[in-house]
Length: 215
Image (tube, rainbow, N blue to C red; front, side, top):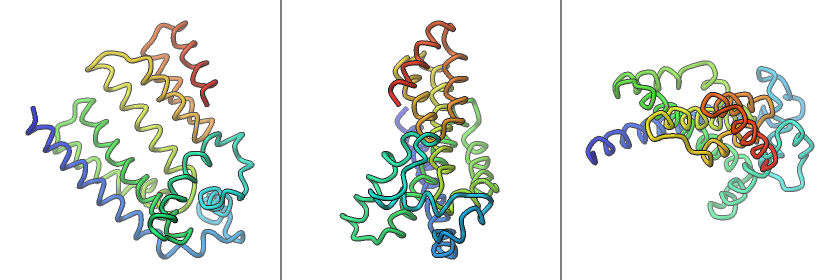
């Protein structure tokens, strides 16, 4: 009912705001250090010096599309909008996008837990636990593909969980598969598993080929 959806939405929004603020604040001590070429691979083997130009410059190095097919096309436009509309410099604009990614990830994680049957309180507590995990604390504070890959993965899992309640949707499974592939090619295994777990193998193969062609 409406009251239930209102409570779910308010809790998801509160978690999203907390995650976004934590990500943005966590980036501040590292903002200058991680975007210099000398810092490449220094932060847990993250390629921050490569990804920062991909997020902030149309003419930056975009040669990693063989591994991260649509990363540049997805993350550069919102950073550009933030720079134009919000009059941000490149670094705060990129930091804001990472914070938004953290917010979307934790909201999706909360939704996933609810869809698989967790009670609201349990889903909230596990979401708080996820926000304090090593992946969140170290992965959502630097410019990298990991945060956006995590968003695509959790959304794909939400599609699978949702299909058990509302029935399968070929379009949503196609987008989920393409979404996981778009950020990092190895993440596509989640999209492939999601499709093959829900559809007969011929239909799943066709959806996977379509997702590949779409990307």
